[in-house]
Amino acid sequence: MPSPFDQLLPHYDAVVIGAGLGGMTAANNLAKFGRKVLLLEHHYQLGGLATFFKRPGGHIFDISLHGFPHGMIKSTRRYWSKDISDRIHQLKDVRFINPDFEVRTTFDREDFTRILIEQFKLPAATVEAFFAHLRAMNYYDHDQRTTRELFEEFFPGRSDVQRLLLEPIAYANGSTLEDPAITFGIVFSNFMSKGVFIFQGGTDLMINLMTAEMKANGVDIRRNVLVEKVLVERDAQGTPRVQGVRLRGTRLGEEATVSCGVVVSNANIKDTVLKITGPEAFTPAFVAEAQAVRVNTSSCQVYMGVREGDSIPMMGDLVFTSSAQPFSSRELVDFHTTSRTYSVYYPDTRPQTKVPHHAIVTSINQRWEDWANLSEADYQANKQRVIEESFQGLERFIPDIRRKVDFVEAATPRTVQRYVRHVGGTSFGTKFEGLKVSMRLPEQVGGLYHAGSVGIIMSGWLGTINYGVIVSAKADAYLRDPHAGPLGDAKASEGL
Ligand SMILES: Cc1cc2nc3c(=O)[nH]c(=O)nc-3n(C[C@H](O)[C@H](O)[C@H](O)COP(=O)(O)OP(=O)(O)OC[C@H]3O[C@@H](n4cnc5c(N)ncnc54)[C@H](O)[C@@H]3O)c2cc1C
Image (cartoon, rainbow, N blue to C red; front, side):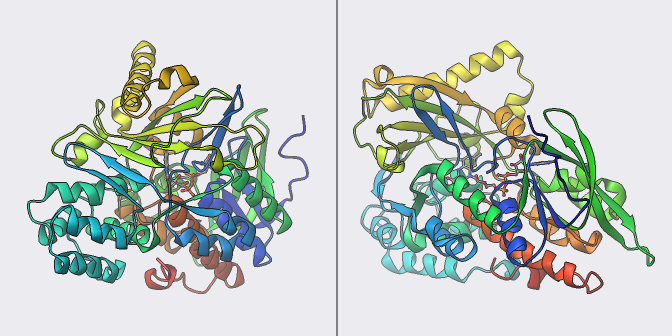
C-alpha cells in the first residue's frame, strides 16, 4: 500500500489542515492563485462533515446534504466550477408538523410572507418591517440584541411565530434564542432569498468533482495524514511566524515535517489554537479568549435505507417534526427531545444511479455532554432508542416503514467527534465569539489562518465555502508580503 508520505515536497507555499468544505475551498483557491498547496486530511475520505457513506444493499447516505441557501450556486460557480454549480437544485416541499401548526412551504420570502399573514394572522406591515430589518442587519453594527429580543420586538408573545422562524435555522446552524440576533438574521435571510437547495447527484459526486478540480489546479492531496503540530518560530523582530507542520500517518504511523509559508487550518478553531499550534505561540490574553469560546451543539442521526425495488410515498423533502409545546431551544437539544427532522432522499437525488433508491435521514440536535460519558451498554441502548423513536415518528407518514427499510444505523455526537476530531463533536463550529478569534489568528502568528465553521454565521456549506474564499485571499496576500500588516477585521470580512 503506498504511503501518503511518498514524494512529499520539503516545502509548500501553503499547507491546509483538513479537507472539509472550508479547507478544500481555501486549498483550491490558493492553487488557482499559483501557490504550491498541500492539503492534509486525517480521514481516508475528503469532505469533512460534507460527506457520505455506503452500506451493503446499494445504500448510500449523506450526512449534511439537507439544505443550503441559493447563494451556493454563485459561490460554487465562482470558486469551484460550472459543473458543480449547475447541479444545485431547489427543494420545494418543506414541512413543519408540531402542536402549534402544520405548514407546507417552499421556504422563501414570498411564501413565508403569505403564511405569516394568512395562517399566523400577522399584519402585513409587521411582516414587511421584519424582513426589511433582517436584510439591513450587518456584522459591523455590533448589535448585542439576542434573537429572543428581536422576535419580541416584532412578534411579542408569539411563541408559534418564533418556532416557525427559528426551528429550521437551529437545525441549520445550532443557533438558539439566546444567541446574537445577527446569527439568526443573516442565515435566515440567506434562505429566504430563494428557498432551500441541495446538490443533485449526492455528496459523493460533489466531493469527487471538487477533488478532480483541486487536482487539476495542482493541489497535492494527502489522506490519512494527521497534522499534529503547527511549527512556529520568532523572527528577528520577535514576531512569531509559521515555519511548517509536523505530520503523522494515521494508518502506518509514519512521521514527517514539512516547511511552508502559510498554514490554513480547517480544524476547529479551539483545537487550532490550543492543541495543534499550542498556547505558547500566542499572547496569554488571546489564549484566554480562545479558551472562552463556546462550541456549538452536536447531532444524532438515523440512516434508513429502503429495500431495493421498494419505494416510499412523497412525504415532503425536509420535514420538521416535534411534539414539544411550547417551542424551546433547550427542548430541541434535550437528550429525550421529541424534535427531529426527516430528510427524504427520493431517487432523483442521485439520477445517475442505475437502480433507484430511497433513503431517509433523521437529524436531531444533541449535546456532547449527554453522550460523552455513557457506558458502552447505555450508549448502545440509547442509540437503539433514537432509532426506535425515529421509526415511530415516521409511521405517521409511512405506516409500514419498518417493513420497507432493510438497513438502519445511528450516529451520535461521539461519531461526529471521531470522524472530524472537533472538540465536543460540534456539528456547527463555535458560537459567535469564535469568529473574532478565528479572524485575529494571523495578528498573533504570521502566516496562520483558520477557515471553517465559526461564529454560527461562517457555518454550514455556504458559510464555510465563503470563509475559505476570504481566508485564501488573506493567506495569498501574506505570501506576497509577509511583512505587511495582517488585514484588519473589516478587510478580512468582506463578503460576510
Ligand atoms: C448532522 C449534520 C447535518 C448538517 N446539515 C447541514 C445542512 O443541511 N446544510 C448545511 O449547509 N450545513 C449542514 N451541516 C453543517 C456543515 O456540514 C458544516 O458546517 C460544514 O460542512 C463544515 O465545514 P468545515 O469547513 O468547517 O469543515 P469540517 O467539515 O468540519 O471538516 C474539517 C476537516 O478537518 C479535518 N481535520 C481536523 N483536524 C485535523 C488534523 N489535525 N489533521 C488533519 N485533518 C484534520 C477533519 O477530519 C475534517 O475533514 C450539518 C452538519 C452536521 C453534523
